[in-house]
Length: 456
Image 1: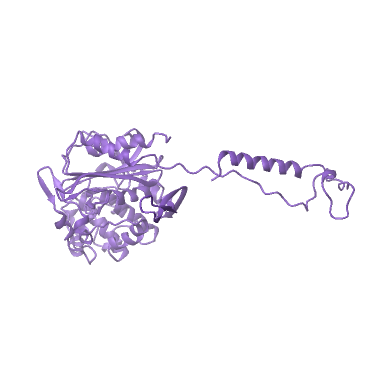
Image 2: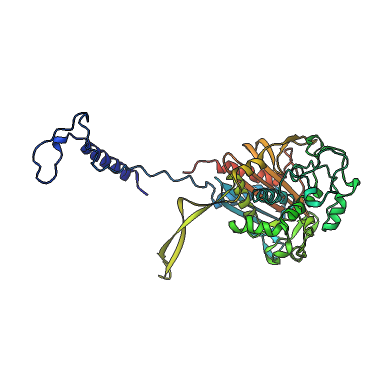
């Protein structure tokens, strides 16, 4: 990259050449055998001949795109600061800055007294799983596999209808918790689910899509995920792996049995064990459409780092952005051997579009406002929620998760393209007036503030 001095020199050189090019014709050398001046043709006004070669325009190099601000020390200090006020078995966090994964950290145990928590430890992330379902639904819609506004009977059969409403539930209404299905116990199995959808007792007397009848529904996610499988004619997790996870190098799954015990965390409650790593990793791996249904509401198992990669796609309008590295050969001071060191190249990125900008915009579009007693209201989008003036941010999109002792939170600001994922186990259920888990919220607030500090 040119230094400021070298750029100045380049401009001076360009100016000198330009002045030479615009000099009177009498001062320019003519071709071989020419010794006198030549009058310009009438009507040219003394302009240089059009046959003269144009001089290249020397433009300044663009300034490199600003990089992340956070350091590993920032993340470690934020964790230490928050854990002075809270108790937990383990905490893991990852950050997104300017649309790209930046830092990560961890505190405590993945398995108490056996294996420490790391940013790459896989944890059943609870209801943040629903965000992954939403992203998969948008990808399938882009690929022409599903119509999000078609009645679900298109995929389940003509008897899968709400007999009490004129309109019928669609995938989109399931994504806003306004499908009109009752929040029944989660279950799996295609025949069983189809039977539930065909039963009058499964439905509420309301018009699907009516925000006034909003009702958070885990069972609704069983239906939504399986609807996606029917549209795809295959397992949703298989599609997810190929379409979204493999391109970003993420190792995660709705099926705990696809992961190894030594990479999965035990889920602790304040009173004991919610689910052991061994139990989670030994889950049966589904092979038939509908068999994964009960995993869709909260069974997605991932690390903070790999979940932050998905958040980065949303924060960056559907593009996954990763730093391009260069490789330098250096001599090891102790051994004298030559080693190759990888270093990020400032301002150089590889970009992979995984969702269209329109798809992300659809996910982020508020549908209506939900007001719950004791908590700040939020705007319901497609699975995502939206609040303004929170954590020092003008706006944040987010989702929470809680199950088996896990309390988790993902957030991002689409304007700054910054985001944070926090996953905890073994802490108390302490929800603040924003409807977010206090430990996660406090850690995020510190990190957002640090992200906005100007780099030296």
